[in-house]
Each structure stands twice: as C-alpha cells, then as structure tokens.
Amino acid sequence: MITGIVGKPNVGKSTFFNAATLLNVPVANYPFTTIQPNVGNGYIRVKCVHEELGVKDNPVNSTCIDGTRLIPVRLVDVAGLVPGAATGKGLGNKFLDDLRQADALIHVVDASGGTDEEGRLAKLGSHDPLYDISFIKREIVLWVKSLLDKDWHKITRTVESGAANAVKLPMALMEKLSGLSIDEESIEIAIHKCTLKIDKPSGWSDDQLYLFCETLMDISKPILIAANKCDQPHAKENISRISKELSNSLVIPCAAEAELLLRKALQANLISYVPGDSSFKIIDPAKVNDAQKKALDLVQTQVLDAWHGTGIQNSINAAYLRLLKGIVVYPVEDETKLSDKKGNVLPDARIMHQGDTAKDLAFKIHTDLGNSFLYAIDVRTGLRVGADYALKNNDVLKIVAAAKKG
Image 1 (spheres, helix red, strand yellow):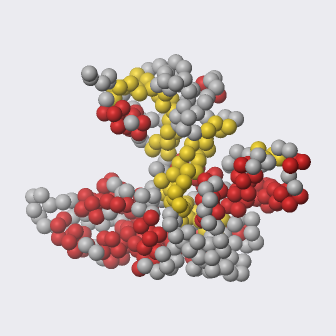
Image 2 (image 1 turned 90 degrees about the vertical axis):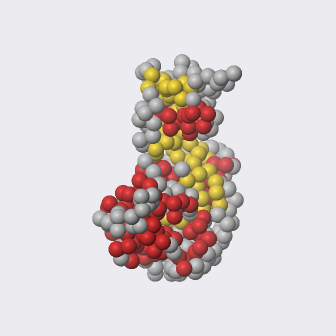
Image 3 (image 1 turned 180 degrees about the vertical axis):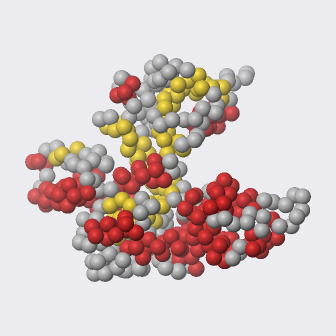
C-alpha cells in the first residue's frame, strides 16, 4: 500500500512528509519547492500483541516502544497542484503522473487560509480552504477523465461491437487505466453507483463520464483531509466549517511544524515521545536551552493540549487503517516460541486488507510461500486454517508450505 501526500504548493506537504519520515526534503515559502516526488517510510501506530501473549518481542521489520508497535508504510510527497493542472498548468502533469501508484491520498490543506489558490503567501484567513479541497479533487478527476477521453470512441466501439470476443466495459476501462492501480471490481462498483448503462457507454454524456471518474476515484483512491496549521489564527473555525460541510469525509486537524520539531527533539535525545502521543517528557532539562524550552512549551500548549496531538500520526493511521481498511497480522515461523528461525519474537507485522486470506498473507511474505501454501496455524487456538481463512486484525499465524522437491 502507498499513500500520496497531495495539495497545492506551500501548504506544508513537505513539512508533513519530513515530520513523518525525517528525510531531508527541501522546505521553503515559495511554490514548487517539491519537483521530484519524495518517497519514504512513515509509520502506522498500533497496540502490539506481545503483552496479551505474555512474551517479550524483538521486532525486525518494525519497532515496539512500550507496547506500541510502529510499522513502516510508504509515503510519497509530490509537487503542488494548482487550478488547471489537468491541462498542464504548473507542474500538473508531473504531479498527477506521480500519483499513479497511490492507493490513498492525504490532502494537506492550509486551514489558516494563509495561502492563495496557487500557494502564494496571503493574509491569514483571506483564503477559503474549502475551495482548495474542491479544486484538488476536481483536477484529479479531470486528469483521469482526460485519460479516457482520448480513446473513448474507440473504447465504446469495441465494447458495443457485438463480436463474440468483444471486451466487456470494466475490462476495457481497467486496461486503459492500468497504470493507476485500479481493479475491475472498483470500476464495476463505480458504474453501478452512477446507474450507468454498462452495455451502452456511447450513450454516456460528458457529465456522466465525469461522475463516473469522480466515483471511481472515491472508491480506488480515497482522500482524507489533513487540516494543517491548526494552531494558527482562523484555523479552528475553518476546521469546524470543513468538518460540517464535508461530513462524509475524514478531516484531521494537523500541525506539521510542531510534529517535525518534536521528532527532531526526539532524534536529538532531548525528549521522550512516541509519535501520536498527546504529550512528551524532557529527558534532561539541563540539556535544553531557553529557546528550545519555549518552543516545546508552545507545542504542548497550542497543539498537544488544544488538539490532543499534532495529527500527523492520526492522518497516517487513518489513511492505512480506515481509508484502505488495513489490518495488522503477525506471521511467525515457530508457533510455540512465536519467533522466526533466528529466534526473533514476533519479528514481523504485516498490514493486510480486510478480506485478505491466509494464502494472501503467504504471498505477501514470499511468492514461493504462496505457491506452496498448505495451511496456516492460528497461534492463539492452535487450530489449522485453510487458504480461504479470512484474516482478522492482530492474528498471529504460522504459514505451513509444502517442502521443496529435490
């Protein structure tokens, strides 16, 4: 799974990305600071199962801090999007191409209203963030529609040809949109939701094609709103208005700069802090100078106390666990010691989709393991489960495969 961080220029996308990954991405107050997409690891935060199972874990692919498991996930921060991007304005075409592989999107919005529609600094409160939310979605939909517009007549002729080997519409559209990681089922669901004629696409109006693309994006690349700069003037009322107007959307207040400050202080061993906490502790006050103390106090009072966190971790968790319906599964090789062959206890935590099976987990670990899958063992019950066993959140499973011949 990959989540894209989107938004217009200069709203804090790169700061959000830096805070989530601590990679050195250029940050500045001018549009198009980000030109090449930045890809890195963020983390989802979940309660680890080791306490429930009464063992001391030593993870390999993730980190466990006082019972909190931080599992790496992929994030991509791409160039800012401006109105007209679908027709190539700004860095629009590149921005949109960089989003092809994203499964979900975090739309970072300037909740303070302090940047205009093209990302230039403006008076706080002078710009409506609801406009940004609307135009970003519109540009993404127009981009997808433009991919179909190019060959729409060819697609419809092929589908409606009446030939015995004629391609069905969902398959034809999936092939056309193959680079966007969109499956046939999502296309079928979108057509059904829009009540469009699946066997007569030539009769779809331009507005109906737009509606189809919009619905398809809602299904295949869901978006949450990260309302950034929540500690700035005008942000609170704007966030309240956004939440009310977009009641069906996930809206999460964020303060990316505050999270970045905390993670840098954590990296410098000045504080103890787990991403997503609503407080931190200064380890040695003698090592923190007055300016650092003042900055940390402001973060605590204006962000953590006011919003119960910086929102960065909440946004990442929501993208993977809510938008993408992710669950966490712990595969082990020794079901009695809960370890791998090297003795690492609960070494791996995998993010799977709700509805995935034990065999899907085997393939996720290694193709050979999936191909030779025999059964899995549910560590909690000791029972064997088959290939079609539906994974549950916090499952601990051993995959048993056929021995290699020769």
